[in-house]
Image (cartoon, rainbow, N blue to C red; front, side):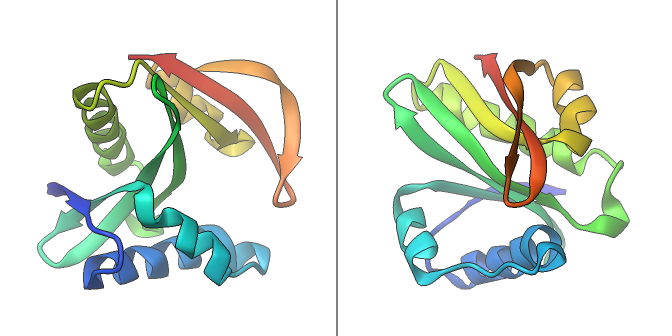
Length: 142
């Protein structure tokens, strides 16, 4: 498996959008707006590949000079549980650390809490609903 940074607007980025749409948006009856995508220009995008097939992706968004927020973590359904998400998380954490960030936060879906807790993330605050799904703020010091 190869892990790499994906540049905004490239064919790989379009592949990433398709994956995120299939896994995260379509099941909720949602689509990306042009405004949302426009805001992604400055984000750090990354993906996991097996040959030419994108297996998973995520992105980091700067919140402040010390903190980035993990967003849009998605792994293809038929390879979930095979270490793709763990590898992507480690890659994202290393990238954030290399760029001088000290903390990663996220809005984690309730059904993914166990995964993030195994990765060392801690819940911060109470459950809340975002895009019709229960979430928790989670964070980890790098």
